[in-house]
Length: 137
Image (cartoon, rainbow, N blue to C red; front, side):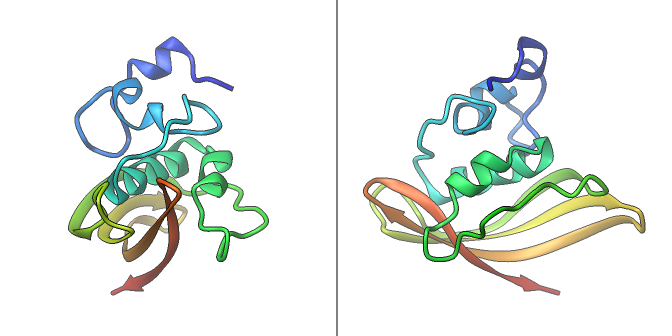
């Protein structure tokens, strides 16, 4: 299912400052165009956006086959507010692996919180996949 015109004109949840259709919307699998993200960082941003929009299809499609869960339904009690990229190591179109450290700000029943993670990505046949992540502090 594609997102509607109203949604494509809103700012992308990943915090890039771009509108959704010009940013992560082009990579989303369940609600966007499903293009391949060219870098580990762009995949990380699209996955945050998928969490924010509830696009489980994109999360599963971009999860590495060796670590992919059967399902990852969005938590209706968590609202993802914004993303900050803290560090990027490799992950360009010329690499096969990359690491992206980020802080994701959310709101849940306990109030506002932050999740810090260092995520690992692997490129297989030209497509980036989320491999795993380690939560920090």
